Length: 246
Image (cartoon, rainbow, N blue to C red):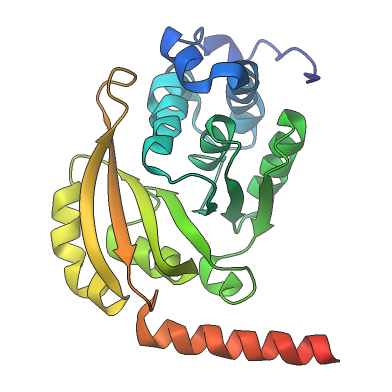
């Protein structure tokens, strides 16, 4: 693995040394995790992907908090990280789990440029960057086993974006905060219309992060997104077949 130039003394100077927990979590990919942290603290701040005040707590609040999501992701599945932003949780998850095939979905060009640079620098061959909104790529990208997201919106809206991208009987894993249970209660009607059959709150990262990371798991049945999105997917599939014939 080749690493680029040394990070200049800017916001990156505030990046603390990686905690011992990071070595445990990232294992043989710890050097790549350090490089990613450096990129976030430098280019990530300069390009407005993260705030400079986040740099001192990048490890605990961002990288480790996201990486422990791997505890509840099944082996060898396909994953779409919706609203990936600076690559959280998708890139930490990719570093911990090379068995996964991960798509980083992000609508903003400056963010997808950064993500593509990170993927190439870290040699993440199992990660693909796609520019677009979830509703725009429906039917254009293959449905996935797992959708991940990190508190980019209230649960009902987040599910509206992520659930339709799932395969039948797939699941969305959303990193949330202390209000996870309340969000589930408030979103039950919307989740039901989206074909959700089960919801639960999980706490991951025991012995690695404090506080534990809170994950809302949303599981779907045979019709992810409900009837309306099933019709959209069918239409998109027909359009795709017609284009291929031409």
